[in-house]
Length: 123
Image 1 (cartoon, rainbow, N blue to C red):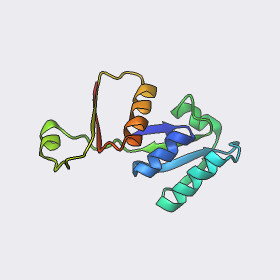
Image 2: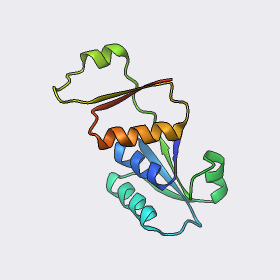
Image 3: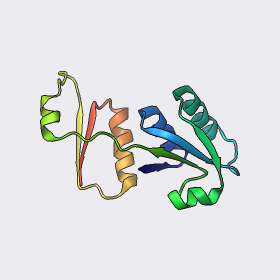
Image 4: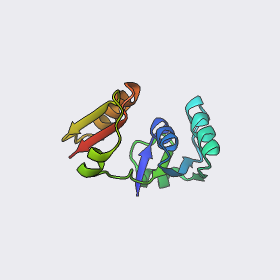
């Protein structure tokens, strides 16, 4: 089980369908970012649980009061990628050796903004 720490990461985990629970610190300030997370969770049927900040600290160091518990995305092997019915305009972004999760996140956001159909990573 993995965690998406922070309001933006939690929101994206909910939108992607990978979040199965959102944990919010009881002391978290109600901001537009937190409200967006809570609204997305409600709309997607993802349960939200209020917890002590220490519980979030044990899951992630930089959570800003919100952590989404997520399932890992389904991994595809080369055969699955090769046999996928790609459209003529589908954009595939391939990354190799990305070690810093923040770099991966930035690349994923850029790929999404560019309309990528899939993001392929190899570590």
